[in-house]
Length: 357
Image (cartoon, rainbow, N blue to C red; front, top):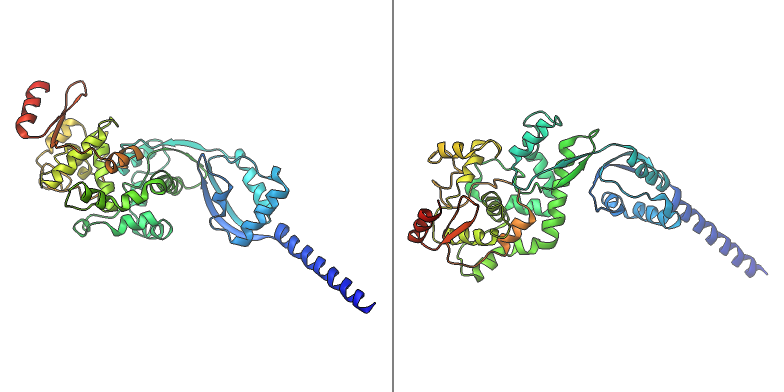
């Protein structure tokens, strides 16, 4: 009889422990302070990044028991600060549709100067606020710890470019973003742009960028391009050619010219050295500065690549570099209709000039 009583006590204690643990799992509170930026296709998993394993498990179990507690996610910035139960946490998320958000579209060929001008014109920021933020070395250092591709980008910056300030130019992915105007605009936008770069470039193609120097060697090029210079060259291609069908060939032309120690000769690059947006850098401005030896971004004067990226390339442009066309072309020009004409030597190129310009 005594053994039966002991067994009963043991079972009751186990049940009590289970109930206490279960209650703790589902109803106990946890501290959470974070701002989570949600893009169009993000899921509830985006909120778990800075939560512990136990707290994440609590929320998952609560959602399993109460699936209606999770509302469809809307793009924007979700801010948390305080103590939450799984129920109040999900309730906070569900309140988001009541908040307003605005759509910001960053175009493919824009640089940080264009983005700053756009945000200033929209009255989201004071002039130079965005430029200062993406040039903030403390911010870049922190982001390098959170994003491996930012770390690779920073660490692969050539020593010869060290006299030029380090920025996030090249990683600020061009896309359409939803921003909460009641939260810091620039902080949200930078985070969204980096996450878009991670999701659209790094996750599917990061290994190809890692191994791009091997790709070049296999194609009989005897120079290397790490992360920094690969993004730099992609940014030049982005600015030089709008037609995606032509970009792989343009990439091949630049690689051929580098191989032969020729200058890039891409006139548009000098605009970046003027510290202005590309909309302000008209053909007249380019012509006026075409032989400016003080502009280190002038690829008619200086060999190799520009000291830094000059824009923020799209995935289409980055892929055009990673899958460059193998040709013997060294020159190209556009006629008045936008048709592109290639040449393998200067005589052929001059003939194209006489025909099409």
